[in-house]
Image 1 (cartoon, rainbow, N blue to C red):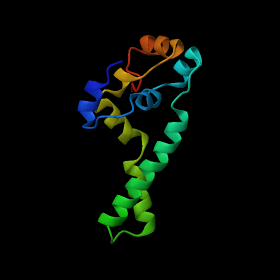
Image 2: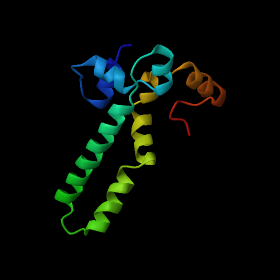
Image 3: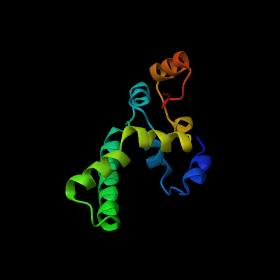
Image 4: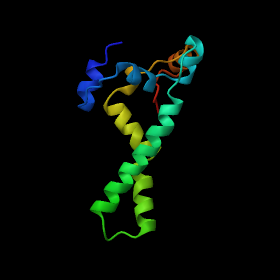
Length: 115
């Protein structure tokens, strides 16, 4: 798969395309093709996203108390916010999905991130 459009959309070019492919590999595809899914990378990415957003909030909103910072972070790093980013950059066009997910997607006539 050519990731050029995805890279242009997010403004970043990946040096390791295999790592990017792994990040876009759904569990269903990994099962069908006996390869590794994105689950471990997702775990790491969630931690990094939480750290970076925490650091940003901490550095840019010094008057917020700890509980307020936690609420802001939860609002920013939530399923709805990440869905908007995924839609904007058409991530679902680049996912490696297994047969079961493709069938489900067709039945629902939605993108993988469909709402």
